Amino acid sequence: EDQVTQSPEALRLQEGESSSLNCSYTVSGLRGLFWYRQDPGKGPEFLFTLYSAGEEKEKERLKATLTKKESFLHITAPKPEDSATYLCAVLYSGGGADGLTFGKGTHLIIQP
Amino acid sequence: GAGVSQSPSNKVTEKGKDVELRCDPISGHTALYWYRQSLGQGLEFLIYFQGNSAPDKSGLPSDRFSAERTGGSVSTLTIQRTQQEDSAVYLCASSLELSPRTQYFGPGTRLTVL
Image (cartoon, rainbow over all chains, first blue to last red; front, side):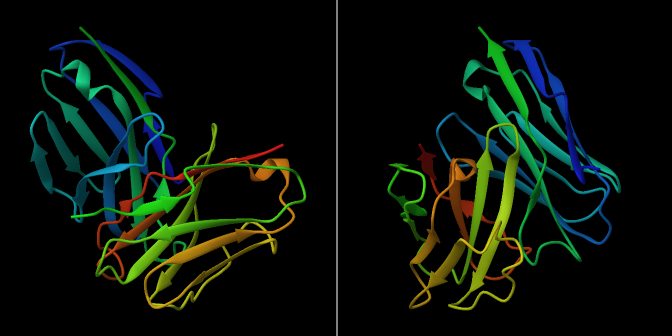
């Protein structure tokens, strides 16, 4: 059973069409939840860290929220340059030392 | 400032050969991490260093994999007797100190084993 599940696997939106990406996790003892963006052929680029339920963070058109079981990445009025794979990862007590456990990502395409 | 750098960016090798992958972390970052990203598999944590020490090597896929870090800076991931299933992108990340500090990733090394 996957410990971090992201949905949908892929999402195609029109420019300006807002939506949300989901990351659900089954681990206990969450120490942090991380969102990254990855462009083809590049390493993941850090977006947000969330540490406790109820926390929210914003950056430009992106807003990340966290509950006890899941996190959402809300994208408001997206632009074509927001097209990328968005990765969610968790750090938890009992996990691989300080290694992150990643979901498989959501491949987002924003059409002009 | 400079980010995490990795070399080479691409490596093609023949089955059975040894390869060395290098990671240069962000200056001042004491923690360093190695991950592997395979098609359809997502990112898999391999090993981390605090300073020059790797307390837990259980994430390494097999005993053909080893890693070291010297001077609290550059790290090398070595794969001996490469197999085709070792083909993947190997990513390195660093953080200011042990987690839950944010990890910043390098561009990766794409390894292809023929």
